[in-house]
Length: 120
Image (cartoon, rainbow, N blue to C red; front, side, top):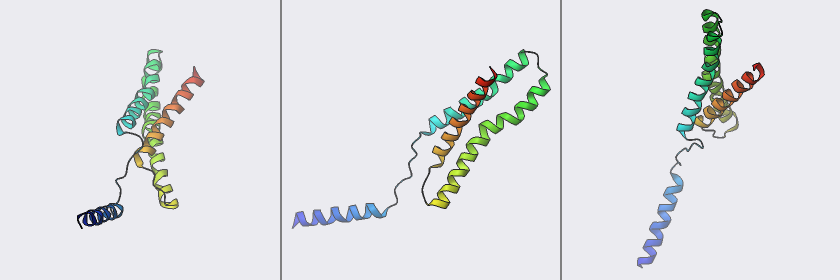
């Protein structure tokens, strides 16, 4: 009789575990996402110091930086995050927001490196 009660309580515990929603897990740790965002910021600002040293007008450099740095550091990751939300809503899948932001930061870093390579 004791084993039957153990089996019954184990079965009810398993059934309760299936009913509880599972915790959402991100594939990419938040530290990597934050590191990619910092790297994107450093990478986007790196060229402007060289332009100022080379003698370009500081006002022109700052106006250019005021447009492009937010576009690469905030805009691209935001668009990936927004796209994940739309895709989740339309297709009923679950793409974690941190994963989308990480992919956006990685894409912006690659795009900046590609642009820098083209101008070098």
